[in-house]
Length: 166
Length: 265
Image (cartoon, rainbow over all chains, first blue to last red; front, side, top):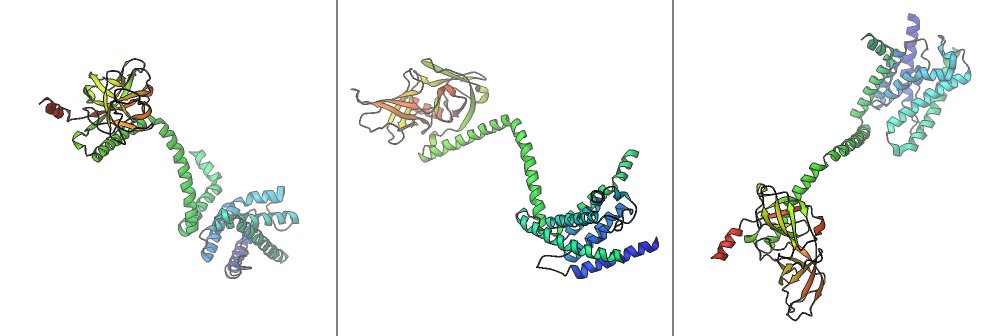
């Protein structure tokens, strides 16, 4: 139990450090910043407490916001996906979502792809709508959502494969 | 009480989510000018919409008050207008001192001696021999007064003769009515030597106890210069529609007595 907690804290810290000091500095084509930290909320186990997940999302969002000066855009996007994660799980995994086991192993590939995809796209939609906050920039927002979602999705997918293979 | 606590516990995630959302939006609103302006704009739009809705309902119920206010305002403006006109012709000695507002409660136009009755009498400050006008022009002269009502000899009364001038040339004449058409008055005493044309405006002349100079009466609609007496016979189409009078203004003049004393001397 203690070991599991320590391992999770270690995982969380590593991801956050990578996000803050590596991925936040990446600026592909001028506007692409992959959101690696979403992997924390993807890998949060279904059996853990949902309230803690929301607070975890809030703290993570605040830290990222402070580092890139977005004043709450990340916070709102992360707490929203944390709050709706239960529904996204149900939609992606169907009846299997109630299983207490860790969700990465032992599920269909298509279910996992759906789950990753929904979380990444949902987060990007909320984040970019909030950051630009101007209906006149609609197509800029859509372009950002599409490109960023794809890059983020690929990175998270690759790192997830790496973790689960270990 | 137990059930309230139970429902709070059951919905704790939603409550926490809403509180944290509020905190992050608040931080956006405070720190980012883009979001400050955007949220501010939305708030202004919403409050504008809702207050428009409530005010349109309110204003419907306040129509009566609003009407009264407009009448009062009109009264003041009329006073200013008259004062202004008097100033222009330097006729200050005869300027009317104040105006009283009254509503028509009886009106006739189909007799040869038409009378209008209004809802203001001595209690409202109305006295005999005051001039009465409407927003469009001259109406008549107060004939008799009770405590709460007053009767007016309308211009549409064969007994009444009002001093009038041609606005452009200041030729003096007098307005009467022949008892036939309620829209047509007669302008008399204009000598054939003066030039007139159809469309000329006729206003009150000021040589009268009742009306200051410059109150509109009507325009020349037709004239006949074949008279042997040396005067035109002029038809004047009145500005006022006497069949639809409602609000009237009674001109109160304090200097009539002084003039009468002078004339009697």
